[in-house]
Image 1 (tube, rainbow, N blue to C red):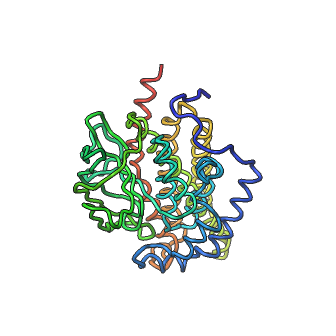
Image 2 (cartoon, helix red, strand yellow):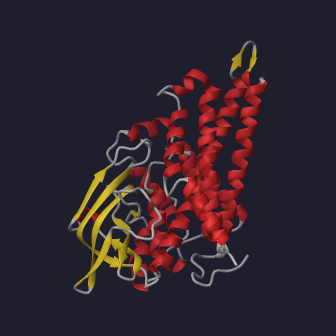
Image 3 (cartoon, helix red, strand yellow):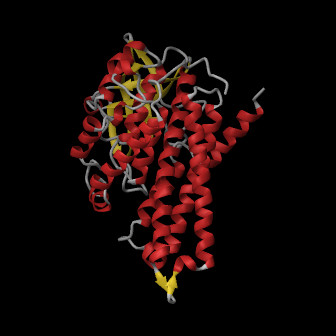
Length: 383
């Protein structure tokens, strides 16, 4: 793999495979206890969308918000450990602001400003603040050459003007990292203490996936701190690549759970005197889902490995992972509904929860079509 000299090491040294398996087992047991289906359904109607007591355990006891951050800021582990956490969170349909906070930490890190990192990252690592990344605007695009939201100099600082939509955990995040245009191109800007930030209006959005909150942010002269040191386009691109990798890992976790539960149902559900899994049509469905989930797992693993190695091909493999894992998750969830038959369509069944999460993440951070177009452009421009 070719190293990318523009970014350098971003995390602490990677742990061993045994450490990651232990982390996986710990998280699997934790989410089984605190993230059962009844808890997920209860939190779907809660204002915040998550249980504050459980979030405190996630941050203070498990230390998940410290994953992927340098040791000097209270961090531990690297991309592989982040991927394990996202996989297990996706498997449990976690509604807490884990993905959004992890991305906020990586955005601050990508900006590369030493003072901002020293100030913000320790508070993210210890769970003092939650965060999110605000990229998409009213047109819904996550990648753009001309962001409408503007950052303007104001008395030695910056002010934000514009609108961001589909922002994960927009209503509850303490720290917002927004992408905005300047005269020199796009940049990363941090809005701290968001609940009291002047000129910031936050509104919830009605979305398909009731297990995860999204919102709209309107900035009207909101004070902000610039995080990048001039090369904002590179910093923004890296944040979006990392977002694609982490979301792909989450999608694989959800798809794997859907496959396991559906296969178990096919083994135990008896129709016409035999398990439905013995029928050729059901076997073919499940075999197809298995192949897609395994392939998605490989794509996500490859993207994580490229990130961990600081490979210059990260943008390409991140786009590949997001495109493939998005479609594999939707396919697995759709087939789960079909195999479960009439009950799979009901509100009381778990399958529709995963189908809605799959559909929602299919569009989050751009749909597969956009990532394939990006892959084509990257391949054409590769020497």
